[in-house]
Image 1: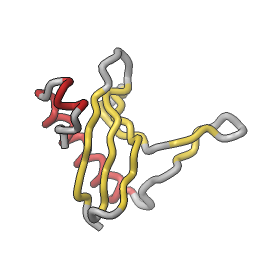
Image 2: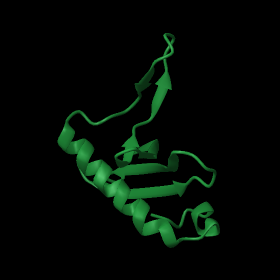
Image 3: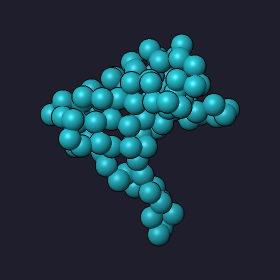
Length: 97
């Protein structure tokens, strides 16, 4: 399975969340709402999640093994860094891939 598209929407307000990302696999399946977060040890991704009835957050979609998570995170963070020079207008038009 190949990642065929990455769309980065940077978050403009202050805070630890820096962007929201959508990734497409094999031009056939998309996962929305992956968050880019600035943590104490650097940038990382958080998969889309939902709060359960016991007030814990559970991932809705996630990689099954650490190698796949690392591959997805590496590509997303690379795209995030590459897109640092784009303007807000370009981001709104979806021009940051």
